[in-house]
Image (cartoon, rainbow, N blue to C red; front, side, top):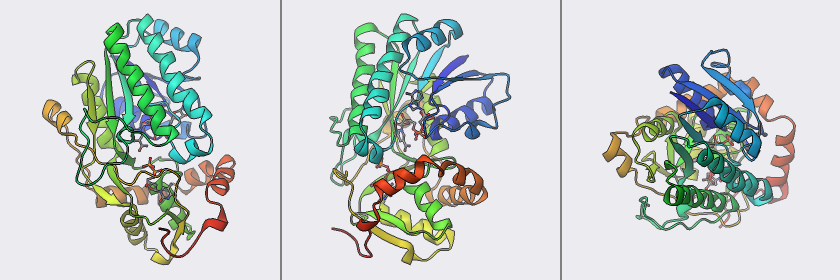
Length: 343
Ligand code: NAD
Ligand code: TYD
């Protein structure tokens, strides 16, 4: 078995590649553009493995995508590459649309022309939009995205699905909830709060901090994708959730407690525009069809993640240098900070 992975130098893609190289005898070709979020340090464990090959390039490069599929003849593609952060998509939507929509289109076309055996499109629960409690989205829920990021993912999901319906390209789509774990770029909630807490910097909570997310440990997500890759039915969608819904403030408090830092580090900032209040999904279909279920309990996964960040201060310092500073200042304008929740 040989798989083409896109976006394998990012958070989830690199966890997936480490798992595949470590636990199977498959070969992996990793196509990644190395944007601000792509980091080859994440793949140090596998870079010298004879079954692993890295190709630097853009998924929107039609010639490269075609050459890789015709030359490498992978059995399947697992497509992670994306501009993945909501706040960046609000500040600057153009690269998000270009990569998530046009880039996915380019890969689908190359896969169709080269008759690829399987196309796993990695997507997100954010495509369902905000749901009032106690609703949980199953795979038939309507799409109702709010941000340029989630709209681009919803659009690429629909496009991928159309390649199954129209061309019978063997597409399978996964929609996962919020991931956390080692190697996550410190722009997302959990790694940002950990990195700031470990340096006694303020923790920026948006609005009132009562937005709810479902938390999935990254290795549980990767195992779910492996199941879908091997057993998922063509043309189907599979939700992958952590079964652990928490308000953001509760997550932030747990980070501080585990890191041994005071709650006085919490600061409130102006809410994100169009902020979705609550995501919730059911992974009952994946469990029923493959037996998969999340195994990492949140407190253990969070403690493990904090320890990883504590032990990898050099990794954090490296990814937070340069471009990150400008992004941080732009997104967390100091004038917006306040000590009380913003309602
Ligand atoms: P990430 O931002 O950590 O990594 C994205 C990777 O894609 C980086 O290595 C980057 O260099 C690469 N990339 C970006 N644009 C590219 C392009 N044009 N061509 C080639 N490579 C490019 O993202 P992540 O958190 O690992 O997310 C991976 C996938 O999982 C995304 O599709 C995302 O939508 C989806 N997802 C993420 C989460 C989450 O909580 N992080 C949850 C559900 C689904
Ligand atoms: P995030 O990790 O960006 O994931 P998503 O928006 O894709 O769910 O954010 C998770 C939640 O945390 C979301 O409700 C926004 C909130 N949040 C903050 O309160 N402060 C922050 O600095 C960040 C990055 C997120």
